[in-house]
Image 1: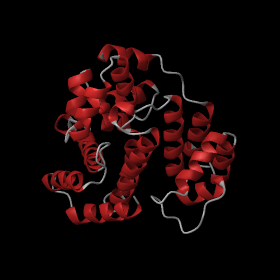
Image 2 (image 1 turned 135 degrees about the vertical axis):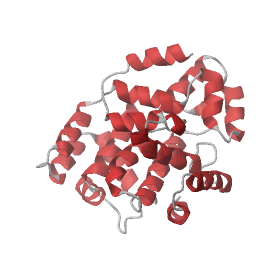
Image 3 (image 1 turned 120 degrees about the vertical axis):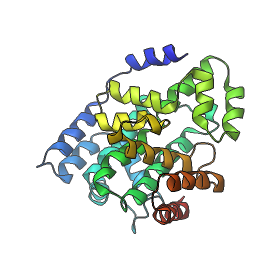
Length: 269
């Protein structure tokens, strides 16, 4: 089954032209939010989804966001790039996540909640790392799309779903069924598409932070903590938050800062 997933990654289509145009503008020191907004406005799907995100409770803007330029101005170029990347990828991979017991809309919300928590948390920890961590937290569950597809093809939906429903370690269930985890698959997907090496490695080691190279470990640990607090089967439940807090404490991080971020996101969630 792992071989099937690996082969499918090799045949994934390239990302859309708008993705590359957005990256060029964001990487250009003279790039402007006006230029970025104009590129996004060429793609009705990006426009609709970006405005939907901007008006979601997770971001709590004080007024309704009615234009792309408004949204880009409020999010900033880096966050806009991350959000449009996530939107493009989920469209390209045709999300069907039934084996995990959630709808495509729920799956999108899980990713958005993980990234919102990362933003609230790491803006108080290290803003220099936030650009990579925000995008990585948006994208780190992408591997579930290919795992779900394999589970459906092998007619194991009911068994898989019943184990996911009660799992405290979803990665272990995935390994049992497909021989690998969401993080490993997501890392391969983004390596295939030529994403930033640090982000790819951070996602790759999110389920196995002890094996992470020293320069990557903080990133991987942050991703692990966020997805532990917001797992697909029980996002922001008391159990999930307590397990995440135990990792925060074990890693010697500030529990108060993380708890405050959790509380803010729960209020919006």
